[in-house]
Length: 249
Image: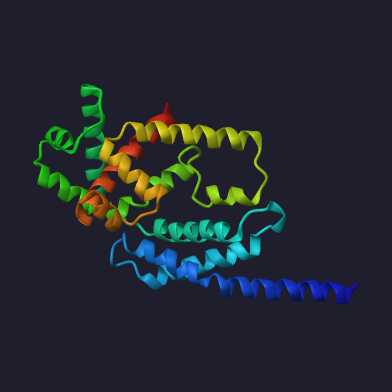
């Protein structure tokens, strides 16, 4: 009996080591995608380190009986670990938080007054600034706000920390309440996306569903990468505002 337990543990350790080595490339691949859209002061090695812990966590907690593809599960864990690491850094300055708050207020006022998606020119006018200044604000905000919507979606309902990540639900059996929450969240997200402009909806589709980079989206829409960054920052602010209103209603 002892020998059998040792054999099982030995096989498990071999499998563990094999999977970590086999999927180590995922860590660098995912870390590189994050590195391309966050401030340059964040070290790539720190992202890789966090992602590596996510991969190890995925290997240790993977349940073969759940019939979940390991690569998919590992990607969720790696992304989640990197996001946790980034969120642990205070990427928002006080002035940046104020800019985001001011833009969110302007968006709400424009949409309330005109009953349509707020265009960039509308928002800038409501804020009393020119369009170039508004675009500069979005550029400043973009690198930090890339994390904002993801964090809010994962913890907005309960104000819990990101340790209770959506991807962790892959490891447990979904309850009727979980299913209801998930469907409710999908409806809230869908309704929020419908309030965006047509161009913003295209960016959401290409970025979050087709997983194109901001540069690739720019090529599709014949816009510069920096302009796509601005559009994306505006989307995140609008979406966060809509979801916050939804959760607080």
